[in-house]
Length: 141
Image 1: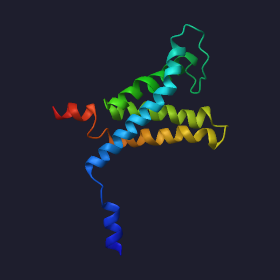
Image 2: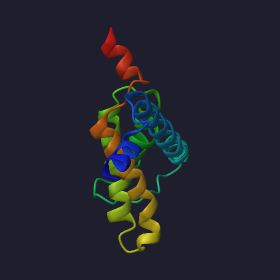
Image 3: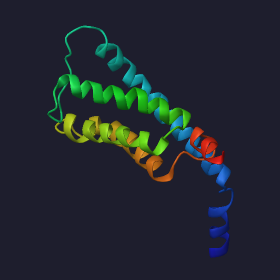
Image 4: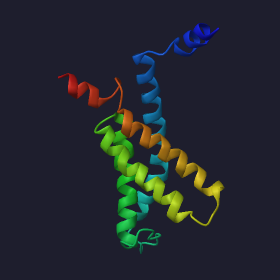
């Protein structure tokens, strides 16, 4: 019985499947975050006075700039798989700040989504981009 369970757990797990799963995580995690970042990007360059929370005490403008950097630039890098591990770090930090500082008093319902994003970005930072990425294409040359 143990052999049957072990075989069924390991069947179908290949490097290709892992790379496809990483591609899906990168593209979905990056594209979904990009939808959050584009509104902030427009607000940053609108010329209007910046009204943004300052959760880490660096000022509203700097906080918005950091959020735009992570949610737009790093999300794009994640999608294309370029500097993937490094790009995932600011995204994870941004989501952890959102969960534990911005939404600290809002309860788990408001913390759940940023924590889910953070888990995705931490996993990508640990595992890497996978075979279907610019990182892999550049390293092969």
